[in-house]
Length: 391
Figure 1 (cartoon, rainbow, N blue to C red):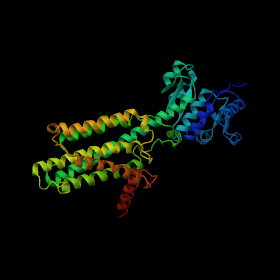
Figure 2: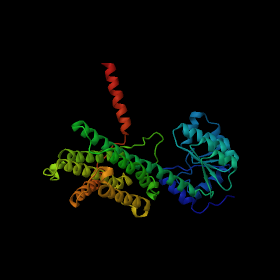
Figure 3: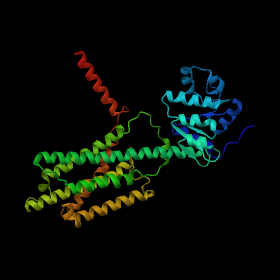
Figure 4: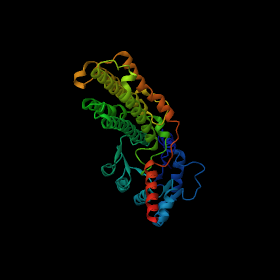
């Protein structure tokens, strides 16, 4: 006798497998019953059902030493005739191996394993209060298929944080270098305090609303899981960040030093020409960030517009930012210390921002090493230190 699988469970298990999440079943049922259920749900494949240690009884696992238990825990897919203590031992063994462990359960006896796991998932309908209090997430419908939704949303939040960090660091690096170089060259930066404040509003408040609220997509389930110790800023983010920041710094510094000649402002009043040049630099810088927000949506993909029509909040924030930027340039000159720009100057600003799109696409053709930049720099530091000691 066995309980039938719920509809959608087999598909959910397959999606977890595609996402790099290994599903293990720990049950008090007989090992043969557990095997049949696992085969029906897709937890066990036909080629796995006879593998040693892939199927194991709780008393066998319990009798192993700590080291043996860690080695066997990696292979276990189904554990039958198990006690709540065996479930806890399995969680502890996997965590010692550096694995990120999520546990589902509904009974009071599952509370230790739910508490010990990195993520405890309690059942909201049949789960006891003790199990719910020991868990991190409560599954309201008691359906394993909801685990896929949890994984998808968790990955979406992590990906959105990375997107915002890439966007924010690009703005900070570019603004810092531009103002520092200009200030050290002739004592004054092209961006004043009010303009930098507006850039920070674009970067922080509006930027986080646009990028951190990106809804999850099915593509997230086709990515490998992120390691426990993996750096938040990946090599891909460093590549994109450096390309965009270098482009913005180069173009805007050229405008800062030679903008009057390039814009044919040499014959104008020097004070007015300087204001026009600085206004164009400020306008181009903000538009670069607006265009770069689209790049930040898809750090690894060429099609940065994929799914954008479904994200009304992103489109709305971009529209609000553009409207406010136009108002600052055209109507709030006294407040922001800017002057009105003509159509040619607006087109130049838009063109400077637009170039970041093809530049980002070309940058994604550049391969990046798998070793994180932080580890690479750490190794170089240790090598130099070791050579100095030997010398």
